[in-house]
Length: 145
Image (cartoon, rainbow, N blue to C red; front, side):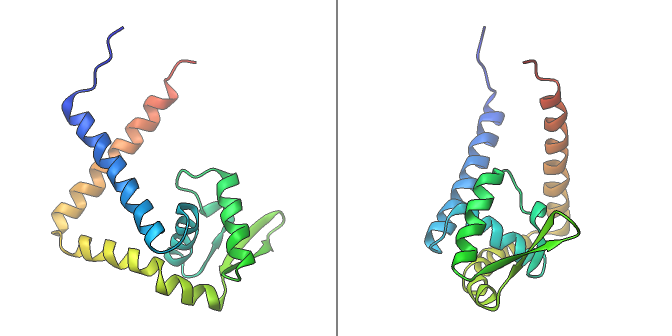
């Protein structure tokens, strides 16, 4: 069996890894875990409240739950029952202040970067990323076990 990844795929994988590392570095600089950043980022993106199931992005349920428990114990978020067994997550007033001092800096940086791109560049980037994701998910379904 020959192992071969073409140069473009290697570069793509390296860039994806470096992006993940940049978000990890941002979390560390802001004094939080990657999972706490993810939770707060999602809440900020949803106006300060969202369904528990909306907090995803590749992290395990256990990791998200641990981050939520810690954020809850710090008075940054709270959870409430919603429609049966579902739960909704909310930022507290303290959480809104904390998110404003931390996660919103990340969102502002992202917005500044996107604002510096032309509409065509943004469209191409998003369309190709979405296409790659959809195609990769289909290929994952085809993997043999």
